[in-house]
Length: 110
Image (cartoon, rainbow, N blue to C red; front, side):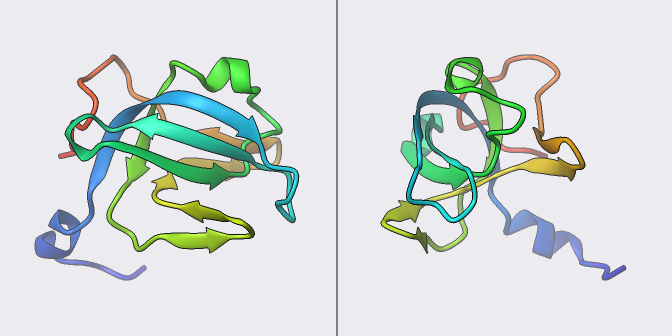
């Protein structure tokens, strides 16, 4: 296991946001959704996420999620992904990281 120092952790912007919109992403190589999230003071950002096995668009909209927002944008087919949606890969599919109770959008993990 690679150890990091505290200053490394402080560089990662891990923040809470609320899913605003979800669309299917038929152009993706693996089943995925296009997801737009409100990160409060950091604005609305979009990503592509392979979470179709355990979630429908209806179960995602309005859900608070945890995103890493300071990675460079990534081209995913015809779509620009602006943040990384956090989750855990399991045999059943990706399980989203969740908050125990609501926090304001843009709240940073500490």
